[in-house]
Image (cartoon, rainbow, N blue to C red; front, side, top):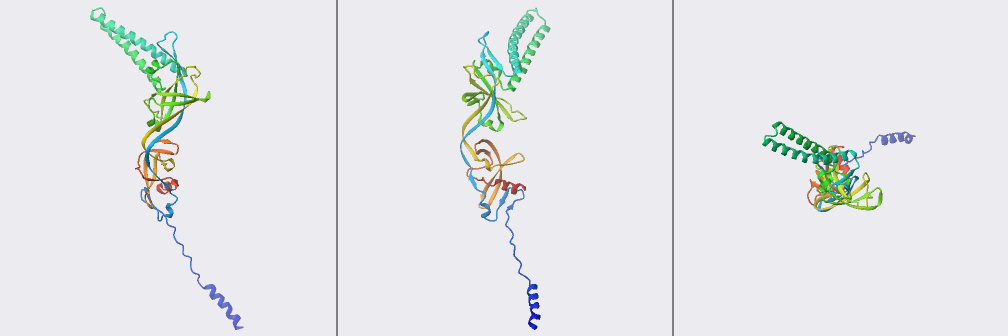
Length: 318
């Protein structure tokens, strides 16, 4: 009986005996500088997901395309063979071009009239008032032609070039993004595919690059001439214009390496075995999976190309 009386006491003592506590080790975390520009990892294991590529300098071929349309056709005038008949897809531009031609005639007439009135004044046959009136008429014509020329230029046309354009030619207008402008120049060849002729490819040449960038779209207009000897291509037709430019000595990196925050572009560079640094970069044109870096990188910088969104969160705090 004494044995059974002691047994509960033994179990109670064992139950009350304190079990050893499990020691929980803290998970190592990266150290981030105050401004977020530098991330240091506690060990090499945590660095493994962030694979890198070396930044290189070399020849870059820029291939991109842009939508366009046949904005005008150039024909030889039947009545005046020395003049060009330009058929625009926009009636308003036709009015502007016709007005320019008329203003040119009027200006020549007014210049002759002014010289005649000045000569008459020199011989006492005309008054100063008549000279002023002739000068005013000439000035009005010159102001009017400037206004119409500006309208054509905004639409991608150079009035002088229109007057000397080759007959049986179409003029295609397309727009390219501002960041592609560095690889585009006057005289560059391009290829065009028209919706009306999907299985054919046409060759063209850039005749003009506009002098301004659209403030809203950040696009630049180009005018491209295409031979149209058989007249198959018509004003108003749609086309896709393809450009290919090979240029050298450009720093490039993977497009996957770039993150954008509040309109600015950044990459992450491994600067030590366990340290990654954020760099602000200025980008240029893009070719497939590569992008030109105009500033912010040096040759052989080890640019992180994988899991950069995780680095973005650590660096910028989100």
